[in-house]
Image (cartoon, rainbow, N blue to C red; front, side, top):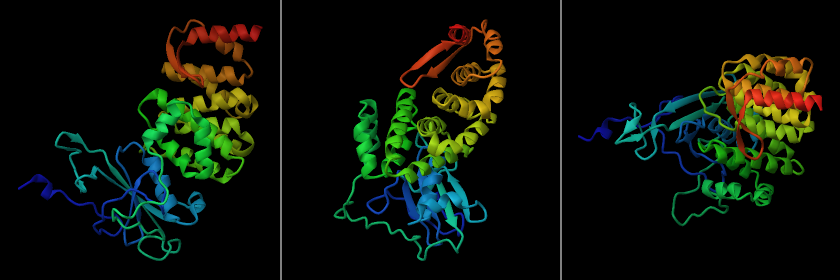
Length: 356
């Protein structure tokens, strides 16, 4: 008997009903993940990599809130909605693979479920959204750019085209956010800058969409189950361009300095904001960042030093002198490319600049 016969089909964690396979979003829903609905009112999205759970959570909440997606940011977990994860899901078989491996393939898929409390749910088993029929003759009215197409636009620097696409549909912001999770460092950093430039342009006509994006990036980073490469960095870059609109999120970035997983990203984000608006960061984070100059990790120590050179502050010269003999190196993205820098050399250059 084939082994897969014994494998379980996924069930809704709230009502224990078997669920149908999640499907690609079409014309009524322009998201980045495959999505499905349970008759009990739950919405679930499929993250095939298992690395983007934070983004999947944001998307599931947005879908669950139907025609009022902005409501998602005001809901309280446990009180206004339930959430659950189903791990080791294989979309090809539509089965749960408890071992996490099948026929030589790693099974990392995750189904993220969310169900609003009854008073917030819209009537009907699909929570106001109906998936289009699966007939091959039913074509979507609007086609989203594939991830490959977005990566080509980012790599070739076609930012103006991305801006135009975002002005036509803010769903492009979510698609660009997905590129942030690329394992290729250069592409990831290009996506950070591209997303910030597109968001800055979009502020002129749809500032609420950009606000939701910044909230989503920070929310995703706060999810301990996710790998959120680029999320905090993108939030910081957007804030650095429009602190008048999003400066209230700076304390959120400062809070991530206490988080081992996100500390480096938070330092970079705060350094980028401090590069343009030093007083906004100095008043909130100078002492915390200065303390990180003694961190044993050279990536943290180096980023803390770099951030301080951007924001300045009292007693900085003494801190710089203490690092002159530090021979450790760290990698830093300067907004255009990644450089390997020696901590002691950076401290020396900063001292010379201050003398000048």
